[in-house]
Image: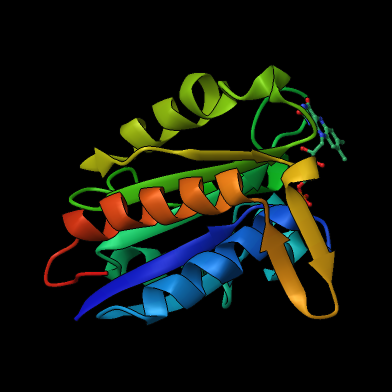
Length: 178
Ligand SMILES: Cc1cc2nc3c(=O)[nH]c(=O)nc-3n(C[C@H](O)[C@H](O)[C@H](O)COP(=O)(O)O)c2cc1C
């Protein structure tokens, strides 16, 4: 069974990008994919900022990434790029941490103005970490979300984009099929 880790890069407690990751994990659970989640805002902040890769909590998160065949990374767009806390975590990964892995990047933004941020900002970092394959990204804007006590709803285009990207992602994983 393939193992996928999701990395949530928002500092927000009520995060749209995190809710997309939750939807992605639910979808992956319908297939032959085991998942686990890293939420960067929940990692020990001092260790993250002081780049203590061997500290408890941080080391466990790094080990999860190393064990995974696939990684889904979600970030809010802040100031035309991915979040600072996501970069703080990615900087703690070994240089080849994504070697041989399939990676699906997801971003949420306030508008379409920065929809290329995944390509010009995040993708080069994923390549530098050795990602074997970066499947088509998902970029959704806040107006495509409806978050209530009953959960997260996406508009039809958002649902289509997320489902399409997850299908392509899973097809690249070893022994898994949506
Ligand atoms: C500090 C800050 C900077 C932001 N900068 C941008 C930006 O440059 N471009 C954009 O489209 N949205 C920007 N936004 C809006 C967020 O990207 C958007 O609300 C996103 O969905 C938040 O995701 P989250 O709830 O997972 O944190 C910014 C929001 C904040 C709080």
